Structures are given as structure tokens and as C-alpha cells.
Amino acid sequence: AQSVTQLDSQVPVFEEAPVELRCNYSSSVSVYLFWYVQYPNQGLQLLLKYLSGSTLVKGINGFEAEFNKSQTSFHLRKPSVHISDTAEYFCAVRGFSSGGSEKLVFGKGTKLTVNP
Amino acid sequence: DTGVSQNPRHKITKRGQNVTFRCDPISEHNRLYWYRQTLGQGPEFLTYFQNEAQLEKSRLLSDRFSAERPKGSFSTLEIQRTEQGDSAMYLCASSLGVGQYFGPGTRLTVT
Image (cartoon, rainbow over all chains, first blue to last red; front, side, top):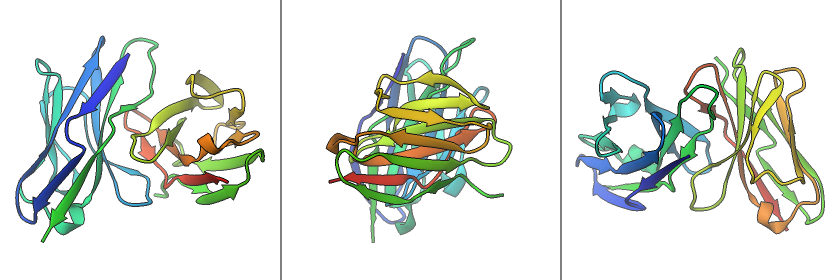
């Protein structure tokens, strides 16, 4: 089974400041990792995913994330945020093994608020 | 490319009534997933289909819940005898590979 912990429920930052949203996971098998963004009253939009290969993954809207297997982390970063980045961000994990489940397991989310 | 669509977007129903939601996946996506999201929480997996076969169901999916994907295209999720605890956002996602692409959700309010 997999689980995800998003360490901060709320992160306030000023516009143009850098931001890091933290995510730790646990799993007994190898994993795929994802970050999604959810704007109010909308569904989830895939920001980026880690499947294999380079541990630094670049996504849409200037976001990137780094997979750290030894620390079981997948933190999301952006060097300079905009007001429009205000939203809720979800980290998710999926285990992969032969015949294994395809379900995503999500964290509880981090609400990012960008202030002018 | 049309994304995942869900209907209705909002549903208000009285306790004890039955409700049905529809999800239309991205065309040619063979996998379809249902999740439920309550306020302040991340989405929780309910069930998923590969083509028309329902391959996995969560323990969250009580016997009042049933999902179908009869022709391997759209899917329906029915809740019978709704309870106030069923109030949530019901999200549908589809995929062809590993990444899942979500629809806008159906918000259910049970009064």
C-alpha cells in the first residue's frame, strides 16, 4: 500500500518569491509520482509526473519537482510565483508492479496563496 | 482534443433518493477512474475500468454504489438511497498510459 504526506496544509508567499511545496511518500514497491493543481470548483490538472530516469522533472507553468528515493520525497518548486498560481496542490503516488493497482493515492493538499 | 466531461456539474438531492452521474472520457482512453473528494481532503479512489471491465473497487464503494462502463466508452456512477455523508465532489479521470486526466467533477449535495 502507498501513502502520501503533504507537510504543509497552507503556504502563503509574496508574488515573485520562490516556493517549495513538500511531499513525502511511503510504499513497499516502486512508484510513479505526480503533482496536480486544483483551482476553486474545478477538477485536477496534471502539473508533472515522475516515471523513471532523471530525478528532476519539469512541468507546466514553470513548476518542477525532484524525486529523492532515499528520502522518499517529491517536492514541488517554482522560482518565481504569480498571483495566478494561487490554488490547491496535490501530490499523488501510484505503485507499479505486475498486476498491481492503478489507483492514485493523494495527499491532503497544500493551499498556496500568492499575495501581491 | 476534448477533455474529460462530467454531467451534471451540480446535483442537489434529498436523502434517500437515487442519483446517477455520467463521465465521458477522452476519446481512445481505455482506462476510466472514479474518485470522491470531500472538503479539505485529497481525492479518494472508488473504482476503475479498463475498457468495459471493472478491475478494482475500493472498500469505500458500499453496496449502495454501482458503476458501469457498458461499451468501454462513457461510464455512469449510481448512488442508491443517498445519505448526507455522500455529499462530496465526484471526480472522473481517464488515461491511456500512466498519467490520469481529470474532468471538472460533479458536486453532490444531499439535504
